[in-house]
Image (tube, rainbow, N blue to C red; front, side, top):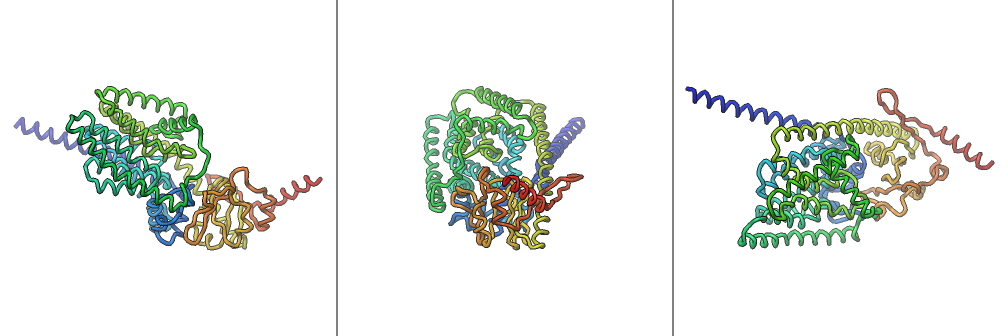
Length: 519
């Protein structure tokens, strides 16, 4: 009887533990998932992708022809945007659901990769949790345009797992999908060498031959990479790239160091010097933990993975932003996971709690920015719609909104009105109505952005307006567009945003300035 009672108590304790674990997991998932629906919106390059979704005739348009202005060849994410844009009808909900699914899937694949490498369950689980909770990874996942990085990471990890499990056809298929998602995935064959090297560490002579055979099976990835690069060059009619100036070696090193340092602290909450200090300590402790894992250089494979994944940043014009470190974060989370798996449960819970708190604080900050941004875009749309009803077609909006022309034209009625909305953010993208193209030629960036001069999306061409310092003065703009309306956004009580038409006031100021100049 006593034994039976003890057994029932043991089973009850195990059941209670499982329920507690499941509840904790659900709460953590909810804490991570909430910002995807409350702290994000369409912003920046999102409006460019939405223009493609509205105007491209079919989702396959970006595969055989240049739809990225001679810069990049990323047809798979553009296909996804076309589908989600048409499915959502302008709503961000489908994008939020897919972004959350991609981020969660990437975390699970991190665990899958480490299990395929025969790392213990605690190490795989710790690395996956770190990847899922890291504030910088969440920052990347919350920006819909970073879907290129999320997709590339998903397919890179899937290809590596299939390769380790000798599923060569699936590994090649996933590799092709990665190459078609973003150019940063071109390092996949070299990452495969890293993980195969790690998997073969410590094996005997016979297995050393097996390791060499596995290295040979990477050949299909190299062949696919060459094929994609050739197709890319044909489609783009050149090697592509934005043509932006690149930082020096020191500047690039600082950018990369900052990206890694802020992985677990985020950019918006922790001051940069403190983030650098925390990041340096985390990397140093992880390096020490890896050094203690016996002998063999392969124990440093996690950091080698991070270094190889970072290599494409040397070609970036400006390696600043969470999205650039989404794939390299796999290596760093792997390294930290190796270290943290040996700590006690209390230390692991504390680390997870700190990451959750940092992510929540960052999401709260982002939520305020999203609300403000949405109000500013909404006020601009209302002002432009009112001006359009009054017969005006050209507007200049002072509101700090990049690509404001594209954002406003996500309202079908406004886009059908053939308006042109100029903003105060240089190099913003716009769709210039054909009948205004001659007058607006002076507003277009020179040299052109993108390199081909514009993005061709179905029946429209999206061009970049002048860079900072190259903008024409207001007198010249008014000479070309005498009907130009000056709109200024103003924050009033409760955070509301109103748009004021200051055209008459601005013209009076310009006339007065002109008179003073003549005197």
